[in-house]
Amino acid sequence: MSQEVLLYVIGGAVAVSAIAMILQAVMLAGIFRASKATREQVAYLTSHAESFFGSAQKSLEQTRKQIADVAAKAGDVLELTRTQLARIDEILSDAASRARVQMDRIELVLDDTVSRLHSTANQLQDGILRPLKEINGLAVGIRAGLGVLFGGKRLTVEQATQDEEMFI
Image 1 (cartoon, one colour):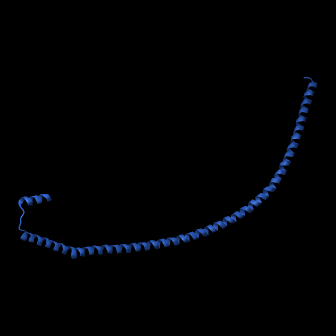
Image 2 (cartoon, helix red, strand yellow):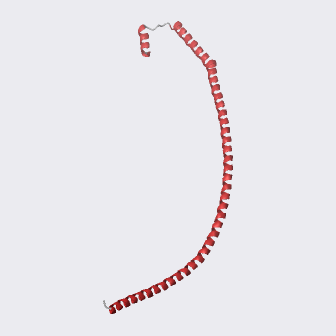
Image 3 (cartoon, rainbow, N blue to C red):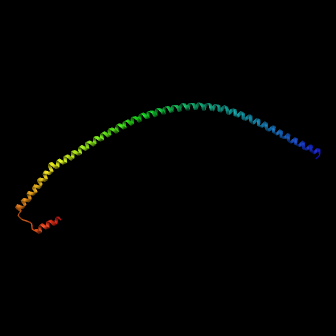
């Protein structure tokens, strides 16, 4: 290879390197501009983020206070509910015990009434119905005796058999 060709090749390589360096410088300037714009946007966002975080922190503190108030009120309501439930339980227990007492009294009254009904029925049986049966039996006996004495007519065997067959 001749020296001239070598010089052209070296010159071309230097030209390509120079162009590459110029492109790198241009790109570096673009990167600088982009980073400067990004820095400005980040600074803008940072200021807004700080105000946002400040308001968020205030809101959070207010929310914490409200939650503490709600928790305190809920505790009061729970305590009141427990007290009311205890009272209701006492009232229900008292009502249940009174109902048991009344049921026991009703059972005693019913038992007494049933025993008196049995006693009355026995007295009625012994005092009225038994003597009536005895009087009725006596009257039937007297009637049968009078019927035999004054009736005089005896049934024949055929009539007596026929009457008995009707009842068999």
